[in-house]
Image 1 (cartoon, rainbow, N blue to C red):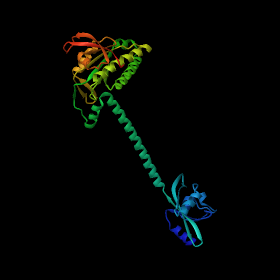
Image 2 (tube, rainbow, N blue to C red):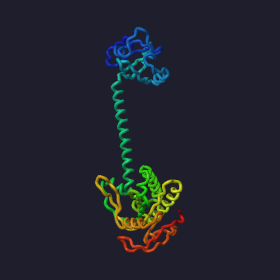
Image 3 (spheres, rainbow, N blue to C red):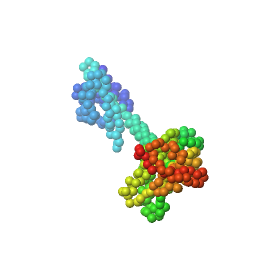
Image 4 (tube, helix red, strand yellow):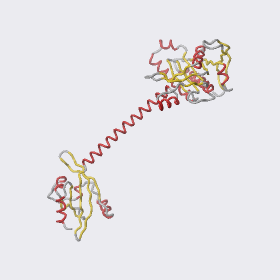
Length: 345
C-alpha cells in the first residue's frame, strides 16, 4: 500500500479524523478534512507530539511491539467549547513504507452521557445516604419510646398485639420539691440539668439490662423483663435504683442545685401496648404500674420503697429494712421495706 492509497482512504472517511504519520519522526504526512476541522490545517510541519499533549512515545512503542494499538484521549477546540476525542494509533508497514495510522473519533456525546450518568448516580447515592440516615434517626426515636421486640413486631407487621407480662419489675421515680424548683429556678438551666440527669439515668438503666419506659415531667419510669424475660428482673431494677441514689449523692456535692428523688419498686402483672394512631407511645398498664406509683408516693426523699413480694425475689446481696405494714390504695395491706444497699454495689 502506498501513500496515494492512504490518501484515497482518508478522503472517503466521514466523521472520523484520520492522519498518516511517519513511524520514526511522528511527522504528520497526510490528513483528511475532519482532522483539519478539529486540529486545523497547518502549512508547517506538525508532529503527533504537538497534536496530542498526552502523547507518550515509550508507551506507544510498548503497545506497537505487542502488536496492539495505542489509545489515548484528546480534545480539540470547537468555538467556545472543546470536543472530546479518542485516538487510536496503529502501525502499518508494507515494502519500504512504515507509517502510523491515527484514527480520531468524536466521543463528546458519550462523555456527556457518562457525566450525566455519573452525576445522576452521585445524586441517587446521596439521596440513599440521606434516606438511610433518616431511617436510622426514626428507628432511634422509636426505640426510645418502645422496647426493641415491640418495635421489631411493629416494623414487620405494622401493628402490635397487647401483651401481658407476669414477671416484670417497675421503678418509678420523681424529685422532691421539683414544683418549687420550677417556679424559682431559671427554666432553661433547670431543664438542662434535668436532661443531664435523665441521660445519666438512661446509662445506668442500660448498664443493668433494663429499659427506660418514659419520662413525664420530672417523673422517670424504668422496667426490667419486658424485652427479654429474666429471672433476675427484680435484682436488676433494684441495682438501678441504688446506683441512681449513688449518682445523685455524688452529683449534689459538686452542683449548686440539690436533686433528691423518691423511688418505688414493684413487681406485679402488667399489659404493654402501643397507644395512639398518629403519635405513637408505648405504655404499660396494670397492678405493677399502680403499685410502683403508690410506693413512690409513700417514700421520703432519697428513699427506695418496695413490697414483700418484690423483696422475696431479690438475691442475698441486697440489704433491706422493714418499714412495716401500710394500707395502699387499690391494694390490700402490704408490708413495706426500704432498700438500703447491696454488697455488690
